[in-house]
Length: 191
Image 1 (cartoon, one colour):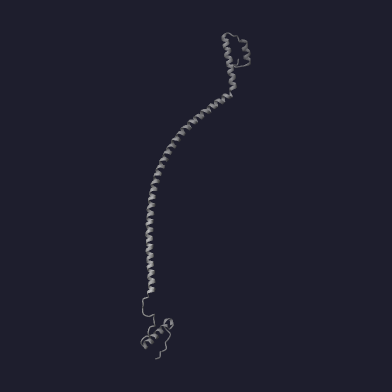
Image 2 (image 1 turned 60 degrees about the horizontal axis):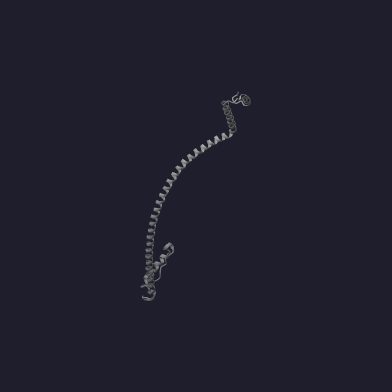
């Protein structure tokens, strides 16, 4: 037979759906489908290729075992290092604690000695200030004595002469004329 003409339809008016229908219709009319295409042949075990894959898998398993052993050894070494470090840190902490205690005691002793020295210094400073004040007062007196030395010397000399004359008068000496002249020269008492 002949096929009837078909109107374009199917997917988006492309006629694809109709062609499938026609193929089915055509294949349904003929009978049995054609034989399948020829393949590679019956299944046979390829020993050389499978041995290579198995060897690769065995190699991967061996590498994995080796890596696991290395990881175990590395972990044991890391654990030993950690324990050693922890022990060293504990010893160092104990030594540091002892050192801090000793240094704290030394600091307290030094602070106590410093306070005693400050107290001693305070007392010594007060004593020094009193000594300096006394020296200053002596200096003032000495300055006054030096400034008035000539006037005081003349006054002393005059007193010594007057005492000597008084002694001579008491012993019987006559200084009547001499005193008039002296009285005119010096007006000690305004006479």
